[in-house]
Image (cartoon, rainbow, N blue to C red):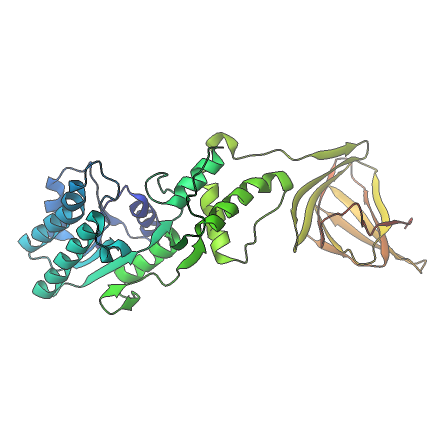
Length: 369
């Protein structure tokens, strides 16, 4: 199948083309403002499907709304007619097509033109009136407030929230792309004349800003956002895509002594804490037990032994562990336990605890195994 994408270098276009290639669509014609106009004629001879994403929403002059949003649609329709190509055409429109403003009027004019073209030729027309779209590769100060907020907060720049109570309806770029490919493959979600992205997130503008600020703070408190919330998960992925390229990494505090080190990696209020423990050769760590706190140990490098003893018993249990075999060992409550490095190199253990360490309530009691 031969596919034409107008606005190929734009926010939606870049994401769509990347996923089309992932799905092994190889005959993709990319048309953008820098493409020679003569190529539109060549492409329209052969294409089987058109994703018409080109347009402007922040021009220098208001007249550019109609010239770009309606004008290119008119050129596209005329060229398809010239070649008697009745292929399916998808149009990226906006909810503002319902409003009385220059941008909305230009989008509505493009919609009407395509509907007329579909009636005249029998071509299948798919028109999406998108709300705010957010995700990676959006241009700050152009595509959306989310793009601007993510970029500015990630770069330690101020943001402006005029009215935090404004209700935002947003769709995520991956959901948009999935729906567009549904349309390509004949499975679009449709409400009467218009198609739609099934998943729309409704949230206050102030809440969006607060969430993004909390993402930035995650590095300091070693937390992770609530990934069970679909919008938070998508917004966090978006935020990370705006990090400065020299700030992808961040340091952790290593608590070092002559036995090795213990470094806290992640802590959450509801999923516990993850730490990295390094033990020097011959070193034994632990010799304590817990009432309610429980842990999982995973040795990823080196070799050692984890010993257990029920606190009211003399019987010692041993589990020999090694980075050569990925084996998780649960640390039950009521058992004193330790871990000894039996090798000649450092032993590295990933440790998960069901709760973040609280020095006021450590639930940790010394007792030799």
